[in-house]
Length: 112
Image (cartoon, rainbow, N blue to C red; front, side):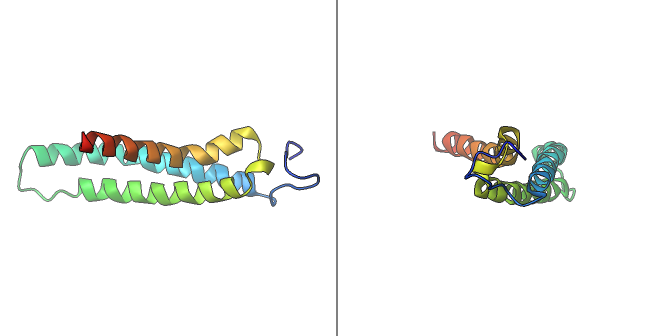
């Protein structure tokens, strides 16, 4: 923790870097886990079958839990930004930035 660039003697509480890493990794894993059910769900919707489509709600649930984990990683990252090493900063911020980029692209595509 000697890489802290905040005020002299200031560094994040013990374990903050590990919590950020774990939460960010869970967010990415849950986002990735939401992709196969979404593909299956879109296939069921496109086939116009009368089957119950449980794949899309599962994909949305996994994605929503991933979003919560991304937020849970981003808050301490932003709070202790100056005291964290560069790798932990990026790891904590990237899941939420990825979601923001996804929403921005979807909004632009929908509007134009």
